[in-house]
Image 1 (cartoon, rainbow, N blue to C red):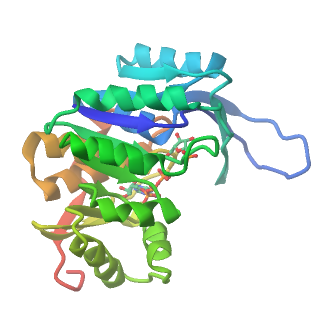
Image 2 (cartoon, rainbow, N blue to C red):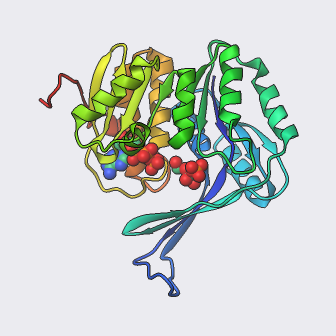
Length: 308
Ligand SMILES: Nc1ncnc2c1ncn2[C@@H]1O[C@H](COP(=O)(O)OP(=O)(O)OP(=O)(O)O)[C@@H](O)[C@H]1O
Ligand SMILES: O=P(O)(O)OC[C@@]1(O)O[C@H](CO)[C@@H](O)[C@@H]1O
């Protein structure tokens, strides 16, 4: 089973506008609501790809009900815990550029945290746990560390998709799979990264620390995978980008869906890129038919130090 943990799920309110004028009344030409939050997105895509998944985390109030209802309609297993307050609304403005305004979220108390930890009692060595997304300010900032320790005690594999100091501190735990984007990778090492060679150089440093699968995503340029199997560069297909929100989460989901089937990291990367790009090319997260079509357009090569 692939569990996802989203500490601060959201309703993603996507507003499409012809143009956006700051300080003026703007009118949207189209609006949409989606259940959101990084782990929730990973579970939604995993479900669409036919993988076994359950979404864990905290929801609250009418927005929390919306999230639960939408996940139920999509038959995504949920073990979401209810807390008081309201789940956040994250506004995604699409007017040429994409601008995001993410809300705050409800207060999560200690008893809710204990309940989440109790849910992890049943983990086994066959399970994966995806920790993705920001930690709300009301939760102990060491929560990911506590969750990772619990998962690893049970022998479950930890997948971590977060950035900043949180990622830096958690490398010590050698997660099974991490997916920083190239900017997060650069921030991690306090450098500017300008070439694929540099991406590979810093991904190797992470792999050498004991992280089995390091995927560095590079938006329209695809991703690099540094793994025991080798180093791979996957090129993303070209297409009209309709929505890049959740593209990274889709990459994580696609990678895991394929990895649990075949155990091959390079095949998993190819599937991950197809999923990320299929999401970028659609309004909502990718569907499995879109992923399969996109898969034919993903090229993957073993990295030898220069592009062939
Ligand atoms: N413009 C694009 N064209 C094609 N594919 C894209 C594009 N943007 C993203 N993707 C796909 O999605 C994957 C993940 O994108 P990205 O590197 O932007 O992740 P991210 O920064 O975690 O994204 P986000 O936080 O927006 O979900 C890429 O590796 C690629 O497969
Ligand atoms: O505020 P966080 O937890 O960093 O990110 C939350 C979020 O922006 O990430 C997802 C896309 O990756 C969206 O569904 C959601 O709104």
